[in-house]
Image 1 (cartoon, rainbow over the protein chains, first blue to last red):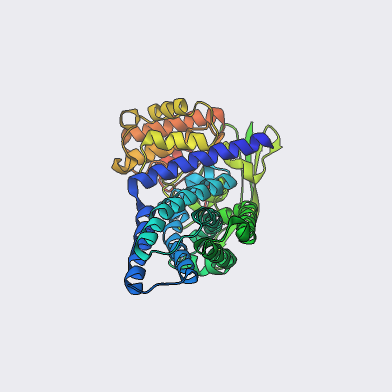
Image 2 (image 1 turned 45 degrees about the horizontal axis):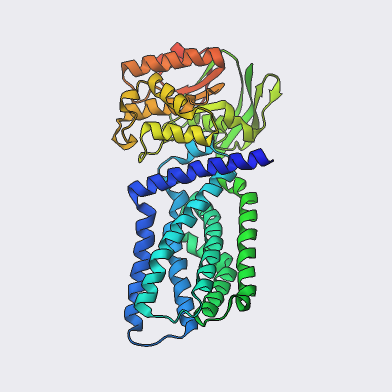
Length: 227
Length: 205
């Protein structure tokens, strides 16, 4: 059992390395991801102008930008394997669960990269009050884990569909709704400067969402991958 | 000792029957050539044997040393070359094979990748991106990919397509070597290939 787990981790690592190398050379997902996030951010900052938003609106805007950017960027992870015909080589070589793990970690890396660019820009352009930066980082990390776990399995489902276009946001929205509501609430608490203990229910929900999504995805991925 | 048993395989798409009742057995040292006109289901049959497509009815059994191999483990024993299978264009040939060796958990992946590239005569271009390869070179690379883990069953869909004369000789050499190790199932509509390689012939359509 332990050997099998380590083999999975090694193989997922190989897939992650391959995806990062390909992404570094093509910048396909990263460009669409970043362009969407930065365009939305600039539009919001122009629309808001000199008005001062309250913490609830700031929290919602942050997660709307992250959600739709994730839909634009992360959907590509499986679709490009399908479109380029590499999916058969992968199916014939890899254990399905390692494919999920590799793609999940890759999507998480992309998401973290985008967050580290978008959030400082958001703070610079829209000047939200950040009362508890530590809590904000916690909420962003835990929210990203759940977002990447759910988006990865949904992107795999979408890649099997004939009409891939805008299917991912439609499928993802109901699944991600509990995560988004909790993450928005947790972000609001961080912006309002509440201490970590006051945000514990939100953090616990975010951890539970991620754990459940990861476990369910690993159990179901084989069926999705086999089509 | 390997044997493949195709039991009454049928495939339908949207109520259109592609083929039905395919019944065949292939054993160690043999090459089954699947022949037939375009649209007769040769590629689909090979995909079913490779586990990439499910049959509408019927079953495929892969037996090694009298042990029936479960479906999810069958891919460890087979190599597949097909026009539908592509390798990563943004990686070099060596990077592609190293990646597939690592993901298969093969020990000495780099050494095996180098050996395979030498076998298919691509070692001179091993560091070049696959996107810069000609179609024939890509076809040779697919052979290296399929043989990387020394499979017992080799599935070849139109193996001679886009290959020059030395490429055809390479295909012949690979098939002869594979028959020593296991068996080959090959699909083609080229009558020369049918007569050259076919120990058994399955006519579709």
